[in-house]
Length: 318
Image 1: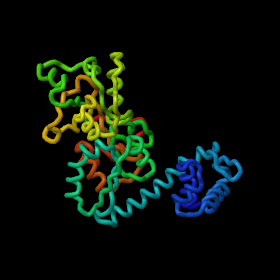
Image 2: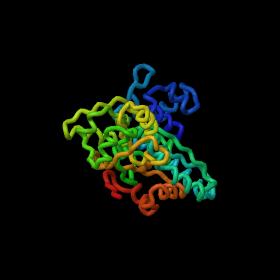
Image 3: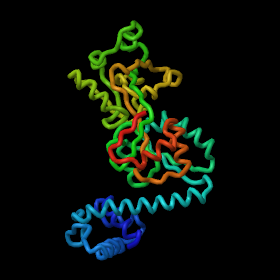
């Protein structure tokens, strides 16, 4: 048994049983991948994959049992490598962060700045994606730390720790009827908001679920004319008069967005919780703990390490 055999099995599942894609990912040949898998099956005495001719089509019942063990072995091998690097590299290395656009644009910059000042020898890589893409990057070992509001807490393979709560704001151009309502001291309601076309996040992004739930509870059907992944796009189309924007309050800056008027939406939509996630059982180098605390000060190493070892289903509160 060797690590190349284990990697071949893991990648076969990740790549949808496409051996050509597996060979490309592992920088080898398709016959080489097939041979590695067959040799492992022969050693274990079971077939891991269902086959149709020479094609892999799925996992056998033994394969479903074997796969989590393969994943753990490869993760522990990676942990062993990281542990050695942590002692040998003297604070040097690479830290990869996966985050949604809103987190990367508005929440992460102060933490990145402080981290770079404290760890100038560490190279930071920042990948952006949807919440599900962030989770996938963590699961596949492409990122060390993930930050998002949606989705992360739904993956049992991840430890998702609460960082901070935030609310939505409603954005309109100056002179808009809703801005005039606010100037007169009138409280914005969902019924009033639904009288106008809306521009907001795509489903699954930046608290969109709480927006939909608020309208649904009052049996109101909003007229959403444009959906986007990030607040900068939303603000651009609000300025153009396409509709009323609903964005994360953190995305509004009075000086930078002086062509827009913001109305507090915390009474309309439930608060949202941004989480920071790492893969369960992962070995984090010392500077990774430093970054986590720079982003979320309550999440010190004394909090994160026990969370990595906690039983599945354990709840964490801020």
